[in-house]
Length: 162
Image 1 (cartoon, rainbow, N blue to C red):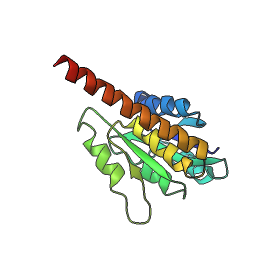
Image 2 (cartoon, helix red, strand yellow; image 1 turned 90 degrees about the vertical axis):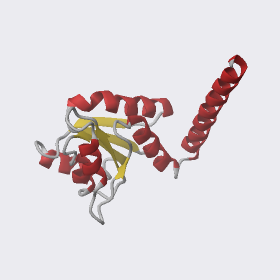
Image 3 (tube, rainbow, N blue to C red; image 1 turned 60 degrees about the vertical axis):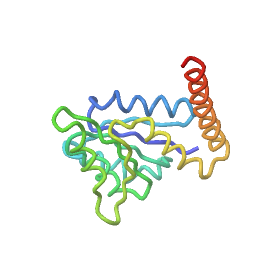
């Protein structure tokens, strides 16, 4: 199975990235986590992204706040799918990161999840890998059913108590 590469611009993004890590672990998907900044370590970020395919990665996740150029900088160096996680900051509540991540020029796509959307970034990467992995696809189907059943259970409890 291909690995998921998770790159964060700063260790302050770790609480959001941890949710992605936990989700990947739950599905048994291999991953690596790195800190590379689009601005402070651009050569290292570019080297990681440009060599990701040959290093057996299938999807890359990039988490960054504020200017949030990391996902775009990564996507510019690879044809692997890149998923951006805009991270909330103290100044603009993550809107700045969301706009920086989602407004990519034509030709360099970045899939973007919600602000602080670590779980969905992991799930989207798993869905991408599941295109060629039936066992992984089955795990996704089972998770959806479990989530469905949990909502129905809560609905039944509310209906019985109210």
